[in-house]
Length: 69
Image (tube, rainbow, N blue to C red):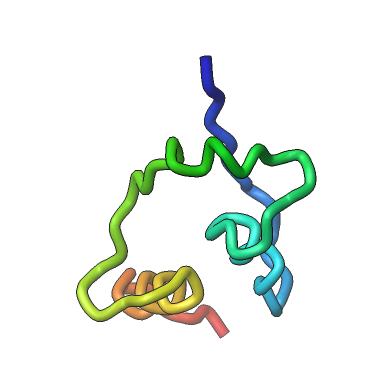
C-alpha cells in the first residue's frame, strides 16, 4: 500500500529545492526510478500556469486577500 506525503512546512524564500523534489527533477537517493511511472498528478495547474512557483503566485493573486499592513 502506498502513502501520501503532505508538506506543511513554511516555504523558504527560494523554494527551488522543494519544487525539484516534488516535480522529481532531481531524483532522491531513496526513490526507485523504475516506479516513477506510478506517480500521479492529483491537482492540475490553472490555465496558463506552468510550474509550482507560478501556481503559488496565481493562487495568492486570485485568493481575494488584502494586506493588513
